Length: 180
Image (cartoon, rainbow, N blue to C red; front, top):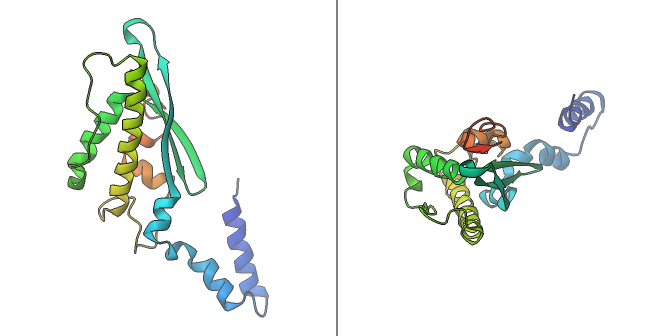
C-alpha cells in the first residue's frame, strides 16, 4: 500500500515537470528542506517515551510484572511490554557500546519485595526517568543512531530500534523475560 509521502512526492514532481511555475520558491524550499532544518530541540520534542502502566503476568513462581513502554516518534506510536530484567540487560549492553551512559543512574535490583505493588509502582517511575535520560543522552551523542543534528537524517522508529532491540515489537515474545 502506498502512503501519503509517496503521493506527495509524485504531486511535487508533477508540478515541477508540468506547471510553468510549479511552486513559489519559498514554498518549494520549505517543502524540500524540511527534514534538514530540524534542530536538536525539535528532535527532542519529537520523541516521547513513557511507562504508563505495568501488568502482572504468569502464574506461581513464574509470576512477574511487565512494564508497558510507550514510544512516540514524530507521528508514529508503538508500545512494548518488558520485564525489569530486559531493562537491566539493555542498560548493560548500551553502557558498553556508549561510554557516555556510564554515569546514567539505573534503578537498582531488589532482592526482596520485587512483586510488592508499592515497589513495582516506584520502579515504574524510576524506569521511566531512566528511559527519558537515556534518550536525552543518546540524542546528543554523535555516535548514536538517534543523533541526527547536522546529518540531514530524520529520527525514526527504525533508528530507535537500531539503538536497541529492546524497543522492537515482538523481539521478546517467546522468551520468559517479556513480551513484545
